[in-house]
Image 1 (cartoon, rainbow over the protein chains, first blue to last red):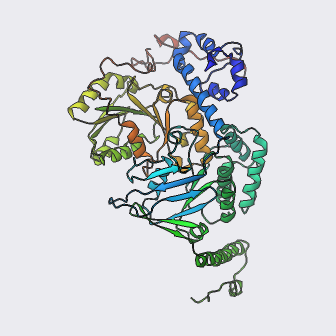
Image 2 (cartoon, each protein chain N blue to C red; image 1 turned 120 degrees about the horizontal axis):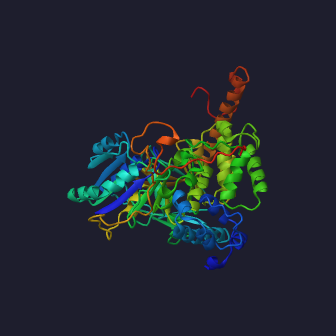
Image 3 (cartoon, chains in turn orange, red; image 1 turned 90 degrees about the horizontal axis):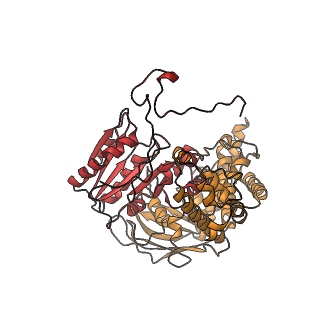
Length: 345
Length: 233
């Protein structure tokens, strides 16, 4: 790289993201824009270097590395990206071979993962995240776009294959929704931050039962609002092509819409769940037992019909929740006739 | 024997990550031992013992734990060789953000957690910047966005490191970390004559030597004064 010949001013112009590198390393380049980075670093006194734990050689090398990696990361968006994920069989905890030939999941597809707690769901996720090549305890192999995956999925901190959404996740930053989204958009080097924030808040309010605005601190969002914001943010701002969901609690959020949104953003969605309503939304489900994938089941027509009934039941429960919340009383009439099955089953 | 130096701020999950990683190594019959460095107190050695891991602990007391580490690492490596370990892990306290416990050509792992705040990567010095592997923990309880922002901040201060997400509770990612730590080619018999990656935090003043009185007349040696301007900044 001809970085060594560029002045700091030229560097900033050519690679605007270097500002993050300067900030991260507490380098105040103001007033030194006409120097090259090396000249700037060389101007530090010995005492300064010691006091602030500065290693000149490393700073220069790291800046080169940083620019290379960020260039790659930015170029990635123009690539085709990830269009399919393939899992090739390995072994269960007792060393028995898994019986399936291969599982290929395409973008905009939802697949659910079912099985008892501790059956190996997180091992499967770890295999995917690490793009296993027979080098994990399960011996499984992961292909991306039908091919051996690029090493960047393992080692680069900016190109994560899997984004995760789980029940236990919280916002811990003390920021408003707007500040929060801005920070995330900056880290993704998004150009038109304002319009993307607009899009996210609009979509999130479409999912959450109760509206919130850009000035709401993220830590005071309700459970449903938080889930809505996390899902929309992951769908729109996360660079990871695969989203793994570990249950979505059924309160204050339209889960179906949420999944539709992920699908619309070309994500590959894997969803570990014990909830029949979520499991049946997927077109297929992977069954895990004793660390191994034992079956892959297509959701049948009958199950799709059952799902419709489940959604009705869920609608009733949601309505009752609202009625009780508003001080109303409940009557049998509220449920009679809505459900196919008799009430006294 | 492989030597791996772990460090990271207090409560970032070093011990949990090491325990999960050792479990993954043990399945492949790799003998691992740990030496835990801390300042005043630790009972992490009991956790290692319970897991059947040979362990020693060293408390630095009134000394800087980094300096204590550097003056003991040679003997610690001898111990590991006597125990016929395949891998020796040292876990250091990382009590101040200026800590710098790594040795050149020895794998250094920094454990840092998502809950510590997104400015933490900027606050930590050589302990993070000179790590070969950065392990980020507690990702299971913060949002995807915060994980991504945190990782990008780590990346901006140490772009060369391999950044990994490890769950210290479930062990997700620990197996993968263990494969990066093992290096059959890199057998360490002694660290004598090796060099630190970066100088340790320095101080040599009257308070280092036990002075307790406050006042300029009692201050000798390496003393620095804050610049307190009269204006509000």
